Length: 417
Image (cartoon, rainbow, N blue to C red; front, side):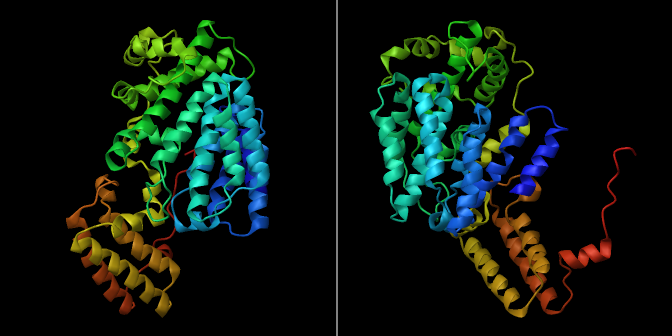
């Protein structure tokens, strides 16, 4: 952590834009290490890094940490066994929620706090651990009389009614909200979470309504959201809503029916069509969004949600759920050859090269379709496994280390050439 912190600080002297991302980097790394850290002392050290960032006065730093805490709860056996945060982390989250209760401009980070508490609580419930501290914080949210906290109460109700953590099912709990909204059109086809996704969209669109109000002067700017911050955020948010078709989540469900009467202006913003027109036509906004749009790669990335399916355990889950003989045969060869290679002492680099070789084929990565499986590619992969297996036995297979020694380094050009 110290080395990463020093590297981030050194980079800040060079990279002057969006420095909050570098400020958050050490705590982001700590969050993702939690699910593979079984020792309490090591976990406390990671949590200390996270707490420091959750106390950062920069709202954007805190939001990055909260997003990554939720992302770190990837449905795997490691998560079910190891993932936990200590009391100081929960205290920092409780403080953010208390600030948000008094200031609706903090509704987005408050919603991220609740997302984390709900997913983490689902993990603890699955392993029959103490839910007390988590339930206590969520209970405070449920008991709050703040009108804008209705959005959090509804989020809690929908999550508890929809999700149950399963270590061997990568879509058993929802991704963090930005990821979920990027891939909502995929998620609604594989799990019963449309109402939950629609509510996430509602919270995010409410943020745009608030920023427009600050920009136009009908809501007072403060140290949490300045006018300059609102102006910078509006184009990015509008592009996100437009490019990922977020309006469809609001148009097909009655998501506003139960919202508080005090949010009349927000309801009018959606029902009058102003939101829909705003994301279709940048001239409807007080700030141009012509140069703000997601790249084609970012839009395509939405097709790969949830990203948890591409971690090592997620890949095995997808293969294990295959019904065809080809899927079963492929998975069998992976396991058998892995055991055999370990048993005969094949170098790790050779085994890695061996596995990467056919995984790329099996998942059609060369055709640019990482979210699809091809029966033909799987059959070819099995044939290649058998050829590679024969080469390994004959001592002729060249793994990563052998190829490096034979080919040498790649001569990358230097900036001045």
